[in-house]
Amino acid sequence: MLNDALDKYIDDALWLISMYEDTLNTARTVLYDATNVWGYNKTLNSIAKKVKSEKELPVLAEISSETADVFLQDLRLYKKKLKFLKKLYAVNAGQKFATNDRVELNTSYIFLSRLKKWIGSFEPKDGFEGV
Image (cartoon, rainbow, N blue to C red):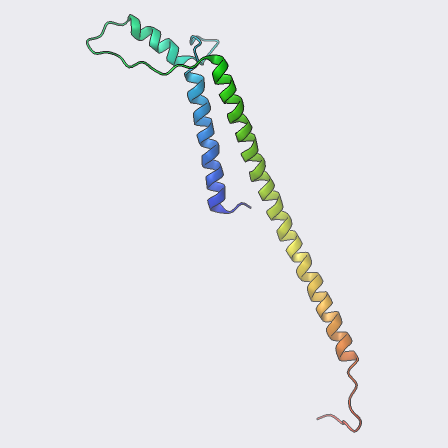
């Protein structure tokens, strides 16, 4: 199992990457319609130009679809790497726990076998009758 703090950092990073992906998708310069749910900002900007208002409506950020694709490709790569590292760490930690049990058992066995050998090789001195 992952260390709680490290697990939280990785989960936060994955959440942030998802937020960036959504932000890039909404800022694409494609028009929003029923078949394409991205391009929300472009659609709102075109509507804002047509609406007559006393105060100026804010212009939302737009980014070309090609540029967004490049950024999204990088973000997806980072997301895959983080998920892989999280899984790798969990697998390694599980193997360490299994190995620790075996190492402890082997160490105990070696210690006991050497102790038996040492005690068995102990010869009482001549004239020793015990307590």
